[in-house]
Length: 464
Ligand code: SAH
Ligand code: SF4
Ligand code: F3S
Image (cartoon, rainbow, N blue to C red):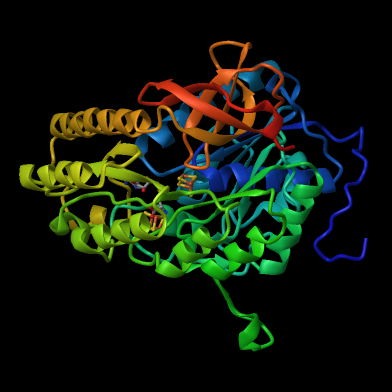
């Protein structure tokens, strides 16, 4: 094939061992695992869909909170056990924890190979050396690596929705966050390769893509040939992707309150296939905490951004992230978070208790001085309030009809299907003759705080 972004998959080499990939952490890691599968298949290895028959296990890790790392250490114990039963089994630790802990992970008896997020092209080479009997480690950053030319191999069986990385790394240095240390400098991916990847997904029947980056609003492609007309910001990229196919649904995450401008909102308003949902992590409602967290926005600026969303996109939902119990957080700071929640009425939220991460600004400069019980209590208050707000948000949808993209059978019953509304709400409804991958109209009749429940509105209007 002549297209520089096209990869032709070679036939698997039956002599090479089968590999399995286990993924933890965020959407970036899900997509990176798909890159790993692509790199390995290019080298002739074949993917094993169960860990039981794998000769190579890759575990793609997350370091965001201490409990994320504890889970990985637990898995390594399990792998160690498997290795006692199968002496030729090889284990590779990939991702953020590999980058953060380097030799410390390599010295675990289960581990043969450690590779950081920018080292995946080298996996086949590293495995060759492992097979000669030596543990291997490659964790250097490569500020140019975007895996642009690699077509990720989609391993999710649903074949409906895919993540597409548009950038890697992060330059923001939020005081609590390990990501800049494990993912390196921010770099934006060539828009031509993004477009090519999305076009291929459409050809392969995908109905939805989610463009992902730690801070999509700082996406910036600067033309290497210095033609300013070819430069692209996120709003423009969103438009390029939206124009690929009016039937393709577009989502994106994560937006940053300090950078999200009205340009993105106007692009969303212009293209009906861009979903009306914005994930806009606030972390705290207290200016004192936001400043200490180095988030570079105030409560007022956040509320101003929310007002802009509501004005330009009245149907848009807003989800967020919170951290409870950051360094020095006082009862008043916590109360400010609760009051911000009441003001914004978030539709959904991911809520965490602060976990100190080594080497971050917070770990170096601020004592982790909110007692664990207080962190837990505050987190529970945030969760309880959010449950109520999510329920109220869902109740406002009862009686309305939404276009739902069907993703699969519902967890509770095979007679029901589930999908999501453009606003990113999970919706369950009786199957009737709808199929996975269909767009159907669902009228909501009831709800819980997590789910909308409804039934098909007009079967004839479903589009394929
Ligand atoms: N890039 C995204 C977030 C990536 S991490 C952004 O800037 O919003 C996802 C979420 O994990 C963060 O929004 C934050 O709420 C949480 N998080 C990050 N570091 C954490 C830590 N040390 N302790 C607890 N939660 C943390
Ligand atoms: Fe972490 Fe902040 Fe970057 Fe998000 S923007 S990944 S929270 S440093
Ligand atoms: Fe975790 Fe790395 Fe993502 S630390 S949240 S997997 S970028």
